[in-house]
Amino acid sequence: MPTSSKEMLFSQAQIRARVQQMAREISRDYAGRELLVVGVLKGAFIFMSDLIRALEVPCRADFIRAASYGAGDESSGCVEITKDIETDITGRDVLIVEDIVDTGLTVQYLTETLRARHPGSLKVCVFLDKKGRRKIPFEADYVGFSIDDGFVVGYGLDFAEQYRAFPDVYVIHAGVEKDPDGGKVDA
Ligand code: IMP
Image 1 (cartoon, helix red, strand yellow):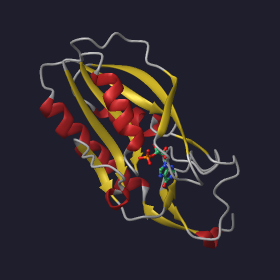
Image 2: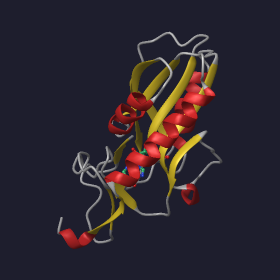
Image 3: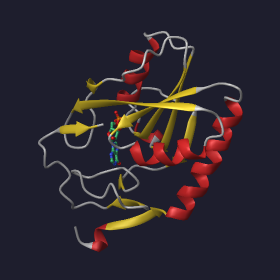
């Protein structure tokens, strides 16, 4: 991808400051409790690792992975879990950590699936929120940054498995091929 096709949206410094703020807020809300943080693979692993290191409450970590099938980079709503958590969440305080909420379909499916397992509490923390793109109403409990429409990469978010390791977040501009895998959107 030529450099001119992407534009920085959030710098490392902005991200670090916001993640620290979120960790303080979450630590206040869960004071005296132990959290089970469930990271949604693959996109959330960098955000989750920064977030949990900044938490001031004890936490356990687990991971879930979902895939949805749709046209291009858009989720269709047919979500499946391709890697489940390994923890019994009954009675636990569970925090789902997601990279980005777009249509809301993936996170809604994950939330419903975990809620059916009777956690003590269940909340959702997202790094980026594209509120204007929802296909269903969904409000996350903790939001790093709200953003406009546009495809973003970096800080764990990928485009065809590229750019995850960028420490900053970039918007990819039009004209870039986004669907090399023929429609499977890895959540
Ligand atoms: P949903 O549309 O809210 O179900 O989002 C499904 C998944 O698509 C998210 O968990 C992300 O992994 C991915 N996704 C959505 N928008 C973007 C983006 O702008 N960049 C990278 N991945 C995205």
